[in-house]
Image (cartoon, rainbow, N blue to C red; front, side, top):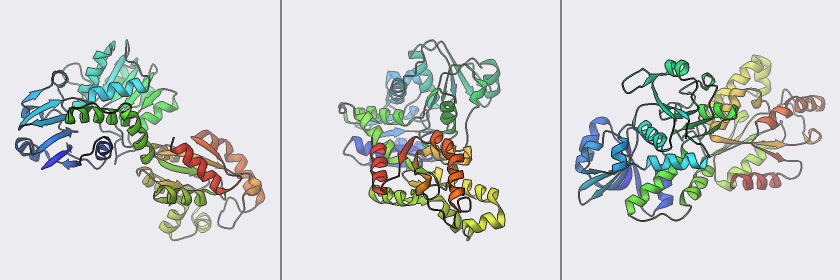
Length: 414
């Protein structure tokens, strides 16, 4: 018997187990079901309570003895409780999305809202927008349909005055994290973007919105808030005060990569290895991974294949690492020269610039663009503005590595 858990078609991306096991003292399982398996699972009802995710939030409704009025009005169920063999359905996603909007100070009142997608979560978003007095709500799908659903092309031409976009599609979700469901450049009146995707922590859609100075957030807080509400329904009890905020901070800190950027010789590998050991996280050095992949030293790659080939290899390594979470990543000194690398690293990472004076940087033969003191000083001048502009935190590393480690750990665990 599965006591508590989550069902869905594909769950490798799910954080639900970790979240629920922080909320309550019960075992929580992730159970993947094919569409053919869903019916027998629901009919057997061999569980105490479950959450439901993509693509079954609507498909489970016929198996319920009773549907909560809110879930019935939304048309989607994501929480089911077994009471003496009878299944009762609820929707805690509405609570979670409202909590996310409130936390991020995103208002829908009197706004024109585009909802991307037509599945169960889109129904939740529509219900939230309605209760928060949105002026107009437009659903967007790959092709136009009934109930005023428009295509993406129509959205970009007929509804370019949209002020808020809510993505409820899985586009941009792990493992296909390098996609965005819509080009927000087509919407000059946008003030906010909400993405229900929570893995990665910052989707390309949200990153693009943040670059424009918009309010934007992915769905991790929504996931945590709805899970807390589901726990209350599971256990028929109130959760502790500030439970969602506390768990959100813990999960976010644990999942965020610690990414170190800076000049060659600034201490990235030393600091990174120390932090990784202290926090019991895997450590990755992009330069070392390139050496292993190429079977050659970086200086030899520069000489025989050229810098552009090296940069392509570097981006490939960063792309692979960007899909991981809970890591410490040390980058090469020139990794920041490509905006694509920064976007990838920020998907699941917080970027720390280790700032070390050029006078303390030691030139070595294995750093082809920093072979001597003049070259190091020149690279520092060229790149300093880039380092500071892309970094989330600037760490002074002119003293001991232990001081830098302490400061990074202090900031990351806030």
